Length: 367
Image (cartoon, rainbow, N blue to C red; front, side):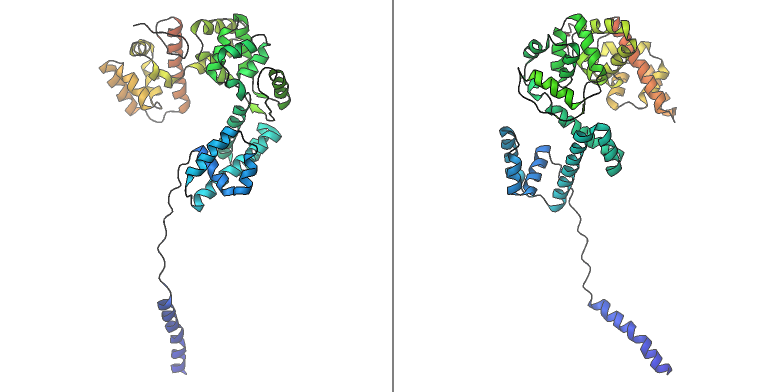
């Protein structure tokens, strides 16, 4: 019995050894190739290829001839995409389609709630940013093709609110060109209206489009899209000549100082210091609290830091650098407040004509 028991115990061990010997060697893990960084036209071409010829031809029916031509060229150039790349492109396309549907049917807040639940807050914000930008570009696209003179001739006799809404869909330089030609009183009302726009209902857009249709191409829209706002109007004013800018702020400050200050604050940010000439930088640095410079530089990029250090005395620059090394555990709120105090000094000196801030308007610098 003991002998039989031993034999019985050894049998599975031998079978296990045999089985292990017979098993094929494990294949080495295949390292996945990194996905290609495709451009938007290339991604569109990848979607078309994945759809197949029948569905792609149906899609082409709804596209402009120029877009069909561009897309066809990209399809011809695309070459081979592996399954991982194709899956990534199609997944992104699906998300964009769902985002577009949520925005157009339920508005931005509804879309944000749906997307945050499905993909998380960060992904939702990225998708909304892409879609709203695309939707905005569709609105009044025909007017962006017109020159400033034509735009002004069409809009000059419209109400300030109407002008503001239309300009909110245009490139900021063209919007600035129209605003610059308006009479001083209307300039202020238009800028104020642009700054206070948040979102516009599809019905209101359609009514305005119907009016504009008499002079421009027909536009169809069905989306709530964020337009205008303080950031946009700051960009517009940045592109105006100084006389128009001064008129707007002088009159706007008289009855809405808070809005005027907020627009002015957005017009020049700390990072814009790199665009200033050396003499202007040297001038405002003299009025800055060294402690503010230290705090501001804790979160500044290298270009801004180099610009400031290059326009300080060697002694001051070394002192700031020494303080930067020993200044730790700084709150971001303190950094931002220090940067804003420096920006306020810059704006004040500019108002006094002691320094120059380069802008997109008609400021010619004479040495």
